[in-house]
Length: 331
Image (cartoon, rainbow, N blue to C red; front, side, top):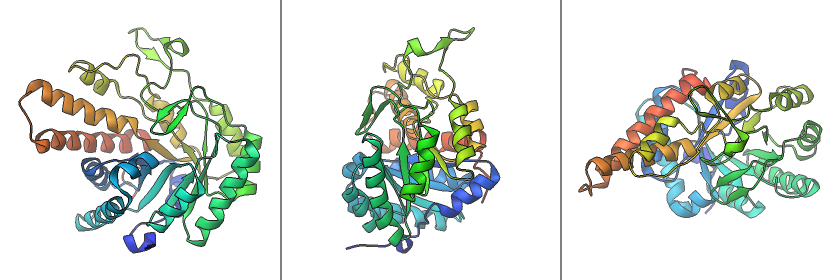
């Protein structure tokens, strides 16, 4: 049975993007796959008074079960209200790969969907995106499109190399499709292994430093389509302290490098008003669970290792909202 996102208490992204652009910050889009991640995200954004986009990939939707997921989302909104978190919350499909999937999500209460046709020839991407926009806008649902290709791996999304977004194509794409926001490729990348070592330099401490983001492309897109909401995918910073915690407790993450936080903060002050965070959340949870099992290998109560992982994730979210995205304290 179809349900409107308004019945579940969600909002679409229009007003939150408008406010973000006026305020010079980016709304966080945090991916979740389970209860503990959802609790951490709601509490992290609620306590830091940040707007929130709860983000679900195709893989996460299959993992959690669509009906259960819908009710988890509804419960998250009710939890936020009960705790007096007066923040807007959107439920967003991340990397939707078909018209049918987008329709299914809209009918199950999503307030925003992404249709990712970036792997298709340009005109096919335009046609598919326009079709999704036509259906979504009849239900007051926001649509995110994508131009350019990000390298790396995230769930079902894989690409061996990046293809930068062409500003002239972005201008045409928005005009032809009617999308509400556009994900672009300016040097971010999916996953924990965003950059190969030969793409990086080393600083005085021997730490790998990735190539800078292509702000020239971003600025040209802003010039051509002023005040239009831009999105960055693959924007986790792959925080070194959690990588080290994983490696020091039996893990093997070699040459895991993310996007520097200062570059993300610079981007958030521009037309970039949505920044996706997935890998950092996974790393935090994995690091804490590995640490607990290393220190107490006899532990078998999930609450004893998932609880601390949840709390650490909440703390990371608060810090990211305050220091990187600039979204804290806006509501």
